[in-house]
Length: 322
Length: 250
Image (cartoon, rainbow over the protein chains, first blue to last red):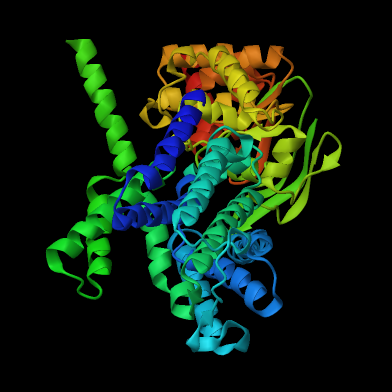
């Protein structure tokens, strides 16, 4: 645990230097977005990686967080810093609601995935029709630069904010790995009947996981709204976010502390390379993600992190044999 | 400690368990035997909350537990193992046992320490860091036992923990089960390995086609014509007796 904590601190410290050491605006931005997707991936990882419940609709949580903070700010004049925890809570509640309905009736595997996908779509359609979200036109958040409004004139502020969120997500996951709740969550993933026989309340464990996962994704949504100052139903509840959220931990390593981080940087590295090679053909990134998903599931089910660990163990083992 | 009163369980038209009444005394080792398909595992599932009985009551420590969820029943102090082993394959042996240990131990360090203690008691000391998925069948059977024991049960339901083991492994597990009872845990076991039943159980109940047909010490049971017929077919007891009689005449 101490080694993992040290690794987290070292990573955060190294990242904190990026705005000072990297001159290129493009690359600073790139790192910032990789951190943003790492946050979403880590949120998904709690439910999907540790809990084994594959969600295809994390946009439902992300979008709810984004809209909650934007609506509170635009329509009710609530300060974004106060709207932020409210966004996390609203997204957590949506998680609890979806979780209650699907876990109560024992939905698992692809059925659970379909239900989450459906909820995200329902919310997207809803956001398209109710006036409070600005319908299809979208919601414009007024530009009022100033740290007090969670808007930063130079983007360094945004950089540190997402870094803080990622730090929070990493610490939360570290706690998960060393807590009774985490042990029970993993037991539920591995075998529900065996977990029940050992006194684990499977329903409550899953419900807690989806609530936590949703809340974390909601924070990501709130951040996104403040960063781009614009939301529409397609951005907030569209499938792109859901796909990113699940692909990042699958590439990096599901159910591992650093998997989503690794996955996010790898995935966005590949995506940039593809843009350089093929230009910005629309939909190309999604096609590429599809291919990657198939390759990962076929050849690296444990993700980059898992593969790295196995290779390292083999190398060290080999040296000992020699 | 455990009283089963008139419990029945049907699956569609199949009567898996029919009006079973039995009891397990505190501090005893009680065996439940019977031919394949007799309904032993179904009865276990009904007692441990995985199935709800259609009729009847299950009383544990004076409380009706029929219809409670498995996790509630486990918390009351009744733990079971699975005949078809159900390891958390991706976790180490220590982590597997710790899931059970967490029931009454919220702290991770404490639960892992208790898991190690139980693991050593069950003879898995050298396997603690192995992934459970890599264990042999004997190892997996032990793991089932260790996990259930880690929940600090008052009554332990063991479903064929010796099936598929070689004679040496059976002797080891028999010794382990005896030690568990000495530590104050009551045991109800389903077993086909008669060597184990004879050496462990004080009382044996025999289930056949969902109905309890006999009860007694292992020696009494072996001599019961109804039991012989349940295993070998109708009329087998009479034929066996006839052959012995014939041999005596000659």
